[in-house]
Image (cartoon, rainbow, N blue to C red; front, side):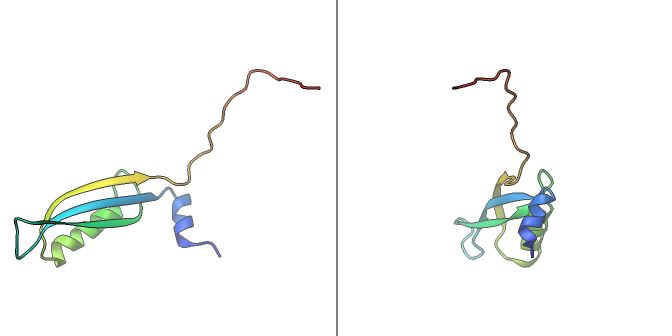
Length: 89
């Protein structure tokens, strides 16, 4: 049985980490941070956009800023061309 995360990585998803700064509802001058991490497709980030839309719709803390880091964990192998052969006896 193949994990769903592995299948998503083969489909082009990469690990996305977002640092979300938001204002506290009772103390708007204070910022709180929240770390979100999920497999997502760059550059459109549909999973992150859906989460942020949920945040705006359901949670009271207004967003201040979102910083995103993304890395594809499975990528094509790097191939290096060699222009010669060395024989050792």
